[in-house]
Length: 232
Ligand code: FPP
Image (cartoon, rainbow, N blue to C red; front, side):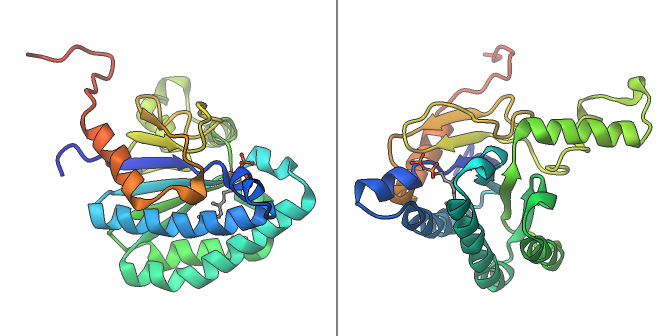
């Protein structure tokens, strides 16, 4: 249990391919993917990880065919409303990062309620990245800083951090991406400056708790220097 990552981010990729390989509709892959997400949330709780951020919908995903976007939104709504009670009972704190105003109003309300209801929970913080892109988050942070009227000399790393959607959360230590793609794709660009990366060929609907454990163990063996040298 030594050297556990405090904050794990996951790019849940490969749902569409998983479904297509089986002759199923893409949304079936997303359904199965949502089930896997539950397993990984539970594993994170068991391990005592502080923060788990799941990349569920990127800003770029809005450009997918309308029926895929709307079914994903429906899936999300059902998922959020049905699983919410479990989140509260398990002591999970829930947060969403991203350009929430673009989401359907009903989902915005569920998110706000869930964040409020769970804000004093102190076990795992579960962060969903929805309608999210790292560049968009950074641009929105800059706009907030300008609106707040800060002087240039008042701005530093820590101050900038507090204008991001992830305000108050530790930087991401480990980013896992499934399905063989080796890219960051606009995920936690600022927060992941020193993140360790873990890539696997496994498609997200096949990503088990056991493989999650392997990724954590892999992280535990890594030597993190943050740009410095280790003292001997
Ligand atoms: C990437 O697979 C996955 C997504 C765009 C959506 C992720 C959504 C879920 C796992 C369901 C909702 C989850 C929660 C936690 C509410 P892809 O469609 O890009 O796959 P492909 O690259 O094979 O096409």
